[in-house]
Image (cartoon, rainbow, N blue to C red; front, side, top):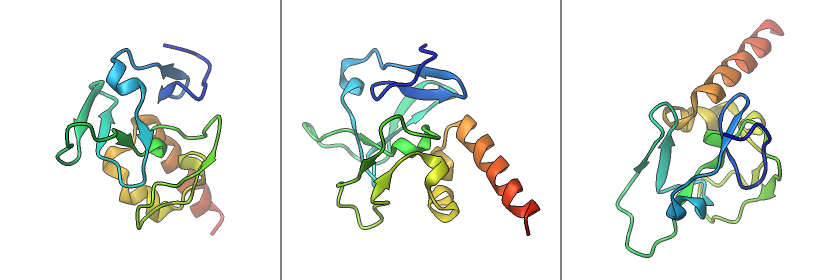
Length: 122
């Protein structure tokens, strides 16, 4: 694991980042309508639908990145595109709930903390 986040690491816990060792997974891209997700507790990847041979692997980066090192404008073209990818911290609660099943455990904890903070202000 890597203690420092970079644009080439994947956050798997509050202070842990990895670089995928499988060459195929090192070069996936972001999509707001991804074709696979990573189960961080089991450290396994799963297809969300059939992936055609030669099709680009895509993941929703905000499922595991609370704050991105290098935010970017999304050009995935999905109807539900979030347009700007900066990390889960910056997404709307409805958008995060849409992906809740695939959020990494540390993102769920941070999301719940954010919700409690908002509720305390009401």
